[in-house]
Amino acid sequence: MKIFKNKTDLIAHVDQLKSEEKTLGFVPTMGALHQGHASLIIEGLKHNTSVVVSIFVNPTQFDNQEDLIKYPRTLDSDVALLKDISEERIIVYAPTVEDIYGAEVSSNSFSYDGLEHEMEGKFRDGHFDGVGTIVKRLFEIVRPDNSYFGEKDFQQLMIIKKLVEKYQIPVKVNGCKIYRAKDGLAMSSRNTRLKPEYRAAAPFIYKTLKTAKEKFGTKSANMVTEWVEKEFAKHELLELEYFIIADAKTLKTVKRKSNKKAYRAFIAVYADDIRLIDNIALN
Ligand code: PAF
Image 1 (cartoon, rainbow, N blue to C red):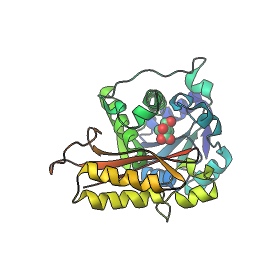
Image 2 (image 1 turned 90 degrees about the horizontal axis):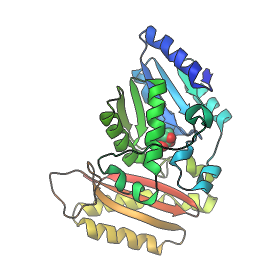
Image 3 (image 1 turned 60 degrees about the vertical axis):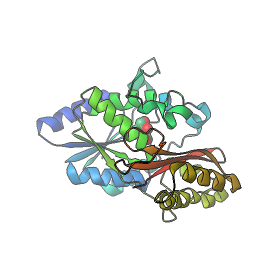
Image 4 (image 1 turned 180 degrees about the vertical axis):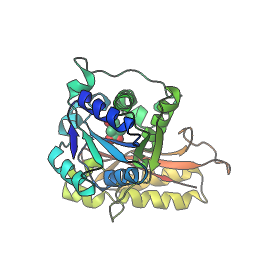
């Protein structure tokens, strides 16, 4: 498997592939790879000659320094997982902070037509500037034909589609279904840091989302939101940060339901000091 630690070598390799008219898929990650990432990579392999997987814990998208320090870094087991999928067709790019940012580790500022002001944007200061900065840089280095992002980070997916549209970056952005553990918990690199009792409690998040979806068939968005807030207020371990029912296109909180619009419910929950997010299509 080809593993590149610096962009100069990767760029030369991509130039070579492009001269051979090979198609390139791209799955950007922060490592601590799991089956959710594997499902994105497998999707990429179905539609491209090779798939580049970047492994880079991007400092500029963390609003919480402790979260950045504690974020799992597991390059050896990540490479082992990738080798099991395909030694020949996966290319790893695992750069240093310097390779990406040089001496100045800071993000550019982006406007995503208001998408950045909702949900995660309200609770994680500067997060989407950091995401935009890294994803744009990675797109410029990797120059993929197709890229793959999980719907678990649905707002991120929409923001990246907006970034590509605004900057006219020639890459297709594909959203892929949320990959869940058997008990329903959405796969996340953060799950490995959950203490056993919190891991056991965490499937409550998806269970509640599913019931909220059922209730949304007959009740107003406000009534469903109040019900979810009450469910979490009773819970002994999980603390709700937000539950929002939003227009799936604008991500604005729903005031009054319309039959013509698609809605989605979004949730952020603290399990001890680990922040988990999830979402579900409602109609
Ligand atoms: O979703 C993630 O893991 C990150 O936000 C991404 C897209 C790799 C950018 O650092």
